[in-house]
Amino acid sequence: MINKRRFPKLPHKAILAPILTLLLISGVSAQYYDNQDLVKKSSDCLTCHDDKAASLKGTAHQMKSDVSPKSSIGVGCIGCHDGWEKHLDNPSAETITNISGLTPDKQAELCRRCHATVHQAGMASADPHLRAGLGCFDCHSIHDNHNRGLVKDDNENFCASCHTNVAREFKQRSSHPLVSGNIRCTDCHKMSDLKDPTLAVGMDWTCQSCHGDKAGPFLYEHPVVYKHAVNGGGCTECHNPHGSPNDRLLTQPDNGACLQCHGVPPQHRTMHSGLGSRFACVFCHTEIHGSNSNKDFLDPDLGVKLFPNCFQSDCHGTELGQ
Image: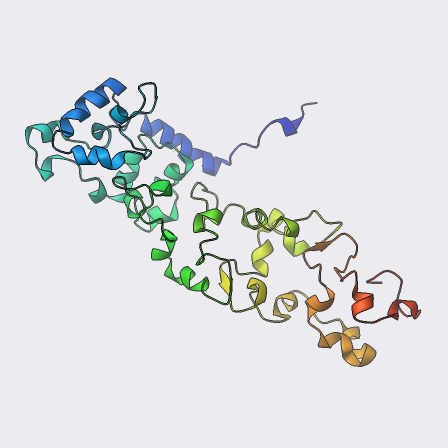
């Protein structure tokens, strides 16, 4: 038999199609120059625009004339600025392409001459930013920019300049540390993903990349934690990933998150004068993400901290939860 584990899972056809389209179109959508032409013909541009070459040094778009001759990556003025031939004869703004002034789809077409990536394929097809009328140069700038990913502003999370409603969530009393700079928007929202409209790659797996202790596997699983494997949900069923006025990023205060799915057991209201209903759910059910010792996710030390000797009274079993 063939060992299927040896073969990686192929992308879904909905993801693969725009990538294949990108590769096919990019092969015919641009004029290509060999490295010698890039250096020679771009040098004519630098007669007047030598400051532009200096503005690219140390970036991914550093010009071919400024890098090792052995480099296979060739960047030059003529690779991006169409109309350069006419501009050499008539150096006016009307004879050269104003890249930032291009429509979003034309910007994507220009950048994909070199950037045949999943992110670029999305910007040419399914990315929500494209649907909102945004192009490459709404977020990125090329010259005089040494920021990571060539985003316009790397001093803060640049996404917040548009996503102001989300930015406000990070200012609530329980929040992920975006404001302090400990995390970035792109730590969770990968711009290379096409299968999720929010650009969050496998929502729960994103959470678990940092919160591995909540991921298990556990002997006793809490279904809501692994629900992502079936039909979504998971972490965000109980937590708001950006911020919340409630403790632990919870979507509802106190027992509200638990009561979305569970009712208060009748015996909690009747036995021991209703003592069990006076505590928060997580006071007893401390291992709420999963447990290796108890099917009800009860605190292993519950018999000591709450009811000393109650498991020796013949009313309860010796195992917690019985």
